[in-house]
Image (cartoon, rainbow, N blue to C red; front, side):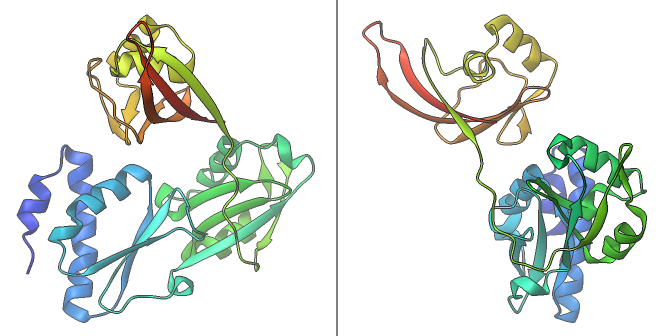
Length: 256
């Protein structure tokens, strides 16, 4: 038996506590009945929380989102490791005119407008067609009811081929900074002034490794993922050395 109260006490707020409660319910079912249980699609922060408590769990954990390197992933709690195709995931493909003009927000908004919960929807990929990864139990509902994205018609069917991870476009940023403080790195990553970065941080709109950080003096380290609401996401890659003026030479990757 695992220590449920210890896991619940590790939650940093009511939202995390509710998340852990749902996870504990799934784990209890697996532990008592011996079959694999799944939870809905998790965002990167929820995955991080789950990985943090994984050593405390009495069953094994596997994450998968319909393709390798998916951002939103389902969690499987198991005693016998499941195959990828056992995950209750469906991939839908949408076809429409001027598909490139669709945004992620447009498509997600139309799906949520059908009354779907966010945990039922995985990644949304846009190229020549739209790929929508969803939980099996809502796939048929979407097929019958998703007819428009905004005011444009869309035709949706099952996608039956193997889905490969899309190439993530990145912009390499090289710069020199006085310190590795959050406000300084945030300003470089998003091309804003340091005072604007400070304001963003104080407004609780900045996240490091998917956790909100409101301390402008927080020191970043190589590999940290930085995101800001309204500005996007970047990876603080590394410090390559010091300049003649004793400034840090940094490399960042901005996702575009």
